[in-house]
Amino acid sequence: MSIRLDERRYVEELKRLVADFRMWKNPLVPLPDGFEDDLAWRSYRVFGQTSPADIIALAVRTRDEDLVAQGEGFISDSVSMIDDEDVFGWLFRMIWGKELQLRQQIADADVENLDATFDFLTSACRLAAHVLLGWGEGDTSSAYIARLFLIEQYDDALNCILPYSNVSLNTNESELVVSDLRDRAIAAAMRRGETAAMEMKLHKAEDGPHYSSGEDSTASDDGEGLDVADDGRPFPQSDVLYLFDADHVIEAYRYFLDHADGDADGDGELDNGNPWRRPDFVQDKLLTLAGAGIVEPLVSTALEQGDGDRLEAALNLLTIYRGIVCDDGILALPIIAARTLQDSDGLRPDADLDQRMRYLESSRDLCSSMAAMLLARIPDPSWSRRLAMDLLNADMESYVRHVRELAES
View 1 (cartoon, helix red, strand yellow):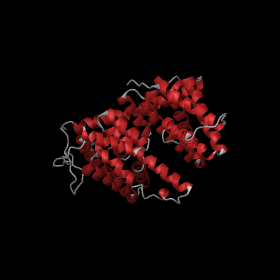
View 2 (cartoon, one colour):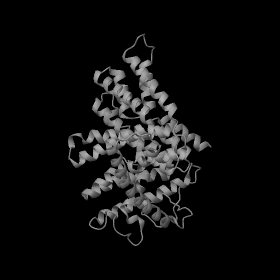
View 3 (cartoon, one colour):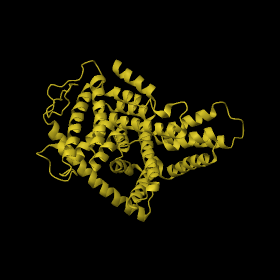
View 4 (cartoon, one colour):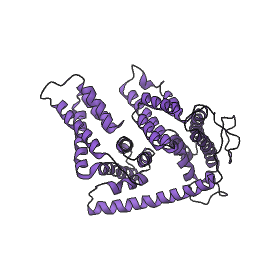
């Protein structure tokens, strides 16, 4: 898979941001009205809805000295690293380094710093997806790798960008990277091989299962008698396949909880050749249905703890998603799901900073999950990329406009 990036255009925008940030910090002449607002907006244009952009925007609005120093340090270090190792090298080092740090903290039970490292890693992956979707020149490759970052499959994503990175590693780093990525590649290849074989078995006779919103959503192996509304919606086959997979995922996770003492680690043989009895396969499907946020963490925790109530809460949310797709189409799911956050305490006029930040992170988590879902399930990569970028930018107006354009085309 060839990866192309309009690196020159991205670097130009980044360097203009750096120059204007320094001009704002130490102005030699009066700055025009709206300069600060434009600077904050462009920080999100360059870095996406991420913590580095938040720091720069807050620094500009508050003039807090610590935030100003953090913001200037990040953008200066970014330019320096990109000059040395290009954009892919910068992204590779940022994500790979933080993931190694996270794994070490987990091994050391360093709970105090774990959340901060994980939050930065999540933000860095969103940044990588933002860059690929916004400046990547190949729709298919950009959409594919961006999705890997959004569902936190760093192994495949880092392997994809490393050959295109001008990364300068010393001997110890080289050995560590080669060993680490080789192990990841083996695990990823095994996962992909199992998934591909199961997909062939699952859809070998498929002309397309037909699903409806019937009262009984229990999984059916052949999907007979189930149809989505024939209302001219875009990508109707994507809706059908979403319902098919959602029904089987819901049934599978209930099976895993009921058979928790059996082979729920995915290492044993298929249960009568049924791919829906393999946790790795089912998790991959769940990630295409709901992304890596909200539903998947609830499911994973529920299975680890044998918590039936938690699992049902997660599966009930997935059932709601299924109903939305059946009634209104897959493109409506992000719009309706986003409305669930509108009653958040973080949107109240008197909300404190902590409440606002929790709302912001919940909103970003949902949008990145919905973006990953669209990248996996919309068959036209040019449209999936455009719609996913709207969601990552938290630009629901643009998203709705594009959905209407699709519906009218």
